Image 1 (tube, each protein chain N blue to C red):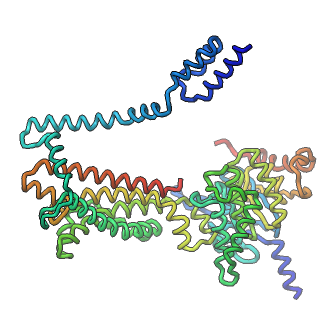
Image 2: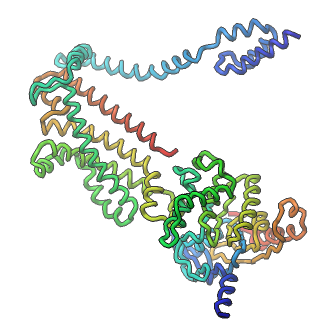
Image 3: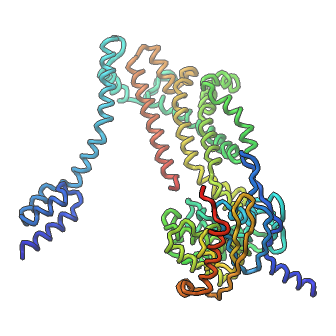
Length: 307
Length: 278
């Protein structure tokens, strides 16, 4: 009598314990025979929530770690073959020295790497911000009106494939200064994804929603704010994400040509100093900052998605 | 004086009027004549069902009355005025509810209420009045508890209720329902049909419903308009359903008249105008 009641209780324990490793069928047959002993065993072998999390984290972590190790291995191998290219270790030591004082300022041509990154980010923010300010409304108009869309189509297809740097001389000519020219290059290369994605989003608004708008007789303003904008937002955010990627991609090249302070200029400067470690560090810095920008925008996009 | 009275009566008899309506679509394969020579008069306060096989153009008729489409030929009137485009006096309950997924149920209804009662220059209502209207519409369909939920947080039946609430909140002269319960399971559908009957009895507004459900058509309607198969579909027959209201689903299931009407519709659909299996 008591044995059966215990086994029932032990079953309950096992049922409640969803993370148990022992399968339920197994547990049932054994608990009926051994009762208390089995319960104790099950409790012992039960992995804690923490170890499960740690396990899945490890599984998640292993492939990227392998990837990076592979990259480092190839890099080491190449640096052994070519004596001019510093290996990972040498670069790491140099990076530690560099980032111990990122914000020094020894005149206009010798500033810490932190200042250079900030200067580049400022340019990107300005060029990209202006592009968003122009590109997103333009995308709405193009998507909303068939006539404008057909008007814009040849212009966009003609100008979009142009290499961003081809716009630099025009910028220099018009603005007569290096900094606005660099911002102009960012602007012109970042604007296309935003125009295109926004207009595609607008043209994909389901006819059902537009019928609702018609039946309710909504004003154009209400259509834009209550129907178009919320629907297009995910598309728009994709455009914004692509744009910021392009902008960050272009800034290095633009700054190499325009000079001043900035990560691109810094790369060029270190090339002239033949400080190859710093160039490699710059590559990593550019990559990491680009990654962070992308991550930040993905998070924002998730926030704004209505689904 | 006498003349205007007559005119009023005339308008009530032909509250919604379709005159020689033709509808031809231009498709990639050429012109497609969907509707041919449709004539229909709908009385004020009447509940009309349009039934027919899929593809017979019954939804097109509804879209024409809604003003979402313009007929190739012929004229449509509502309350004595020609239908020139969509308008809030002809509210539509869409087949797939068409609620805006980023707005709560309350906001979806409010959008309609605000447009109809909050925007007109002569009768602008206060925010509080608009809120009362919205709450009342949601209460009418029994969804006060879900007013702050987004459409994808509620069931299909509830979504359609919100769609009905949105349409009714506009206090339309004509309620147009495009297969309103087509996407719902049988039990939910029956519930909503009963509720719709109750609501329509209360509001007394004219209704046109497109359906492919014979029981639904007979149960809800004063007249069932049966359409022939397309292309060039027309009105085959119109069946008067003079069953007394309020109608009770269970009692009618045994009712001789109800079953007779039902089999009339079935005979039309499956004997005289059976759709050839494609």
